[in-house]
Length: 77
Image (cartoon, rainbow, N blue to C red; front, side, top):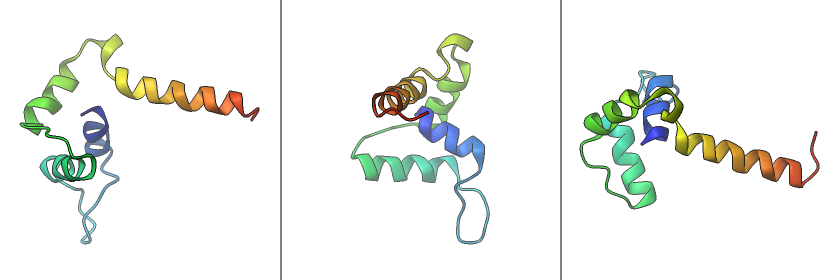
């Protein structure tokens, strides 16, 4: 849900009319794309926002670390 919340807050995902996508539409897209069930996306979004500062983006931080490791492994500077 961190990815959905982050994309929603960034307002970078927009409809054809240029308006930012609604949280519920982003959640539905992730459900379809990853074949998962998010459930109450508004509650899940609030749960992400209410986390303690050190645990706000644990999943996303893990993804960043994986990318950094691959970057280092391939010798990029």
